[in-house]
Image 1 (cartoon, rainbow, N blue to C red):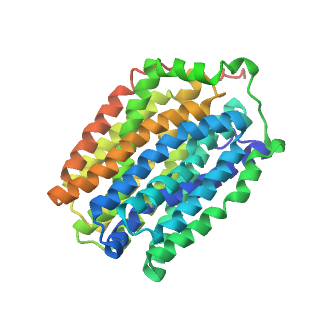
Image 2: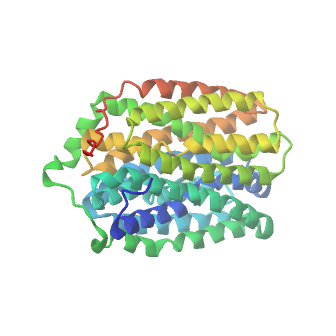
Image 3: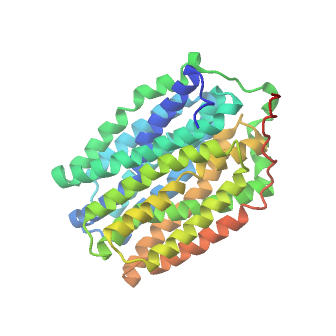
Length: 406
């Protein structure tokens, strides 16, 4: 599965990017654990806190094309360092915020923009610039798995910190963990680790390439499917602890469910990264989205026990963020890698518009109806739609190597 990363330089680039994503995604994907203690401490209400996190979902996506464009033009190092510093500052500032507006600033703007600047669009774009074409699919899977491993590690650690030193201490600890990733930036962008340089003829100019992409039907269909992915993920990372509480189960079930999602997605991400060189990415995406609709339906019919949540988390986790490698692969196939950070960043913006709605509407649903039933139904419908809209995407067949003569 990792055979294409057959040089030391390629492996160093890939693992460095994965390590940075482990921190930024681990921090971001575990914020749902803070909803209940934040509400108990501040009395702001679930809807207000959910709105702040929903703003964060949108801003995480909105910063992606901006960060990608800056990285494409000025280099990834400055963007990644700035992102990690802003993420740490937002986390450290949150305990001092006692209003809804304050949480929007610290979590919705600063933390989200920081984690977004150190996320997929910049990291996958930076790695692609330094890797040969045959290694990019596998590398994107490994980088993506780094984010999933971050969720697996951060969720139970932060839950334990919340229980032992309180949510404020856990937030300050999160800020320190973020700063620990700074040395990896230098390793990632070190010129001696580059194994590939993009050809000059790939450069048609940033804005011309963006205009071309926004007029491409396949690119827009890709956006529509990724919108659903964002809705689904943001709803779950924000409100899974609330769903667990509604079922009368302890908070540890939520933290371990999030950890299982991350662990399962490590396998799913590696598989997805390897699969993009064997199958059309649009078919991989269609299968992933269809499986989500089926899993949600099974969950709704199953008894709500800890085992149900763990099995549900394992099933969802396999495709959780494993949609990233095939999505990035399609963008690269359609428009090349010169401005992959920008173009994939725009796709992630669509993802996070869905994320904003998933987090925000989940808070409204629990406030008005007392449960998340309508959100689960909407999630199923959107997942089924996403499976369908990926099929018409224009994608060339995968070229398989010719058989060697005996």
